[in-house]
Length: 116
Image 1 (cartoon, rainbow, N blue to C red):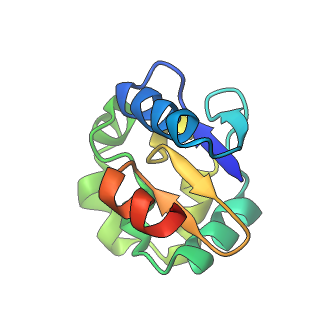
Image 2: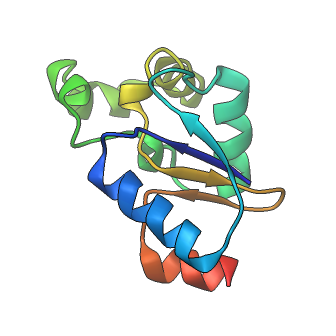
């Protein structure tokens, strides 16, 4: 499994601790150091079944400074994916990717239902 997170994010730390406590193995990836590519994001988005908006870090400073709340509704799916691939700080985290599942954001119950 691939665990994509921002090490200074408290939610990411909580998710990582949860994975470690449950003995779930993963490959760690710092989203700030290695931003997901357009192709990765497109694959994860399709596999997740989630609305594309769920992949945006809507509480982040960059999201707010770019006024994305107002701009996203007029953008195409491809434009949104391309935008997300430009900066890891725009992407909601953590993201956990396995062969058949993509989890975005840490919700303990959802992760437990999916992984345990």
